[in-house]
Length: 97
Image (cartoon, rainbow, N blue to C red; front, top):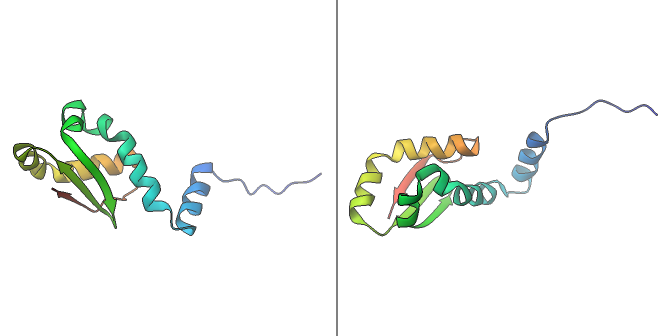
C-alpha cells in the first residue's frame, strides 16, 4: 500500500479549520481566559471581573480605578503578552472598563 506524504503539523490543520468555520476568535477568547492568571499574575487576575475578545479588541473589566489606570499604561505590554501566549496576533488593541 502506497500512501502520499502530505503531512503537515496538527496545529496548522487546526488553525485552518478554525478559520474556515469562523471559530477562530471564540477559540482564542477561551484560551485568553484560560491563561489570564498565568499571564497577568494572581493579584491582577483576582481584580479582573471580565475578559472578552471582540473583533481583535481585548476588553478587560476591572473593579478598581487605580488598577484600571495602571493597566492603561501597560496596554501595549498586555497586548504583546497575550499574543505571545496564544501564538498569533489576535489582539490588536486593549480597552479597559
